Length: 393
Image (tube, rainbow, N blue to C red):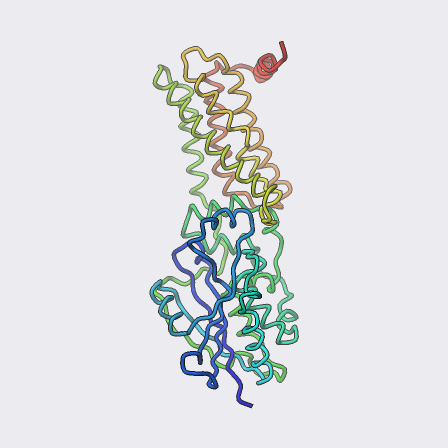
């Protein structure tokens, strides 16, 4: 029986945010087709770059991806132009299995069947390839992938973004404890490289290697990916300590300009943490992103910090009227940050070390600076002053 050849294409990472984790596709080589259609790439990673609602849909967890079909020649041109490696694994499959996969993909590529709700960890270009193969291998891929994976979702995310510090920190800040649970090899195949590695270990029903032939179609000029999670990132702690020390130092300064500089710095901290905290709460409460639920980083970026810029207008004066209220609000930021540290040390169910390293010393410096500016009042007197300000008259 003349049957198509089924291969898995694995694409290395690129420079753009969405390409940091690589990509997967299925290649069908069918000599029975016309020359233009003999080598077709079935790609589950297609989405509209120019969609006006792209960012909003992503934030809401409602981003639509679909299965597209293109030629191998065109696909290689695109990935070469972005300096992304391309390797191919030709699978050893019975003719009837190869034909079944081909029929499934052609049916799935129809417009009425091609779209799906994208989920970065649970339903993406790699998991779709994994599931198609497992379905037509009688579940053998899933059965062979139930062992524990060495890294969690978060550790994989960190190792693949460590070269992009702000992306690293942004993703780490936005993700909740769900991605810190131990993962299986099956779950780790949300990454194309893990699909490729597992297929290389598989055998067919006769004990022969599942991968008949593996070769590199294009080798990019990039360093190899790290296979281990990065260690503690001291840079975030150093940055937080420096900012905190500066905020503390401003509290000791004298003169109108120093007071204004402290007030402006506090306003900037309030806007930054308050806006971030608002976004974290939106991701938690108003979206379909399960990985952003119960995020303890809201303690480091409290939403009440948005009141600090308003109070800063008064705090920069020579005789601020609401200085004790400022102290109470900044002090609450210190307290919630300390609570985040305690949760990290005691529960350890969410790996919040980078965020704690940055925001805890920042809040401590801000709190001590305001405390000094307010004349080093006792804590209880500050709390009594706050209650007096908010009490009904």
